[in-house]
Length: 106
Image (cartoon, rainbow, N blue to C red):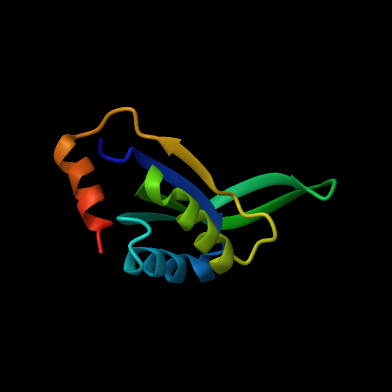
């Protein structure tokens, strides 16, 4: 059975976004990364409400690679507790899902 596709979300400072994206694609941990610049994040951190302008990374990978991706993303990311959220893909265009799988093979 083929691995399940995942969409992984992560916000980061703009200065890190391209390096993280290119590294993860180059290392075949993700098939693709979309970078959405200048998203405004409002969050609670250490009992204060904070606001930051960040880049949202939307990554496509598989369940087989998630643990490896999370570990590498944590190493590349400057935050103490980065947002890393994985959502399973319930359905998708079969040729695109196959492309994801093919792109992750070494």
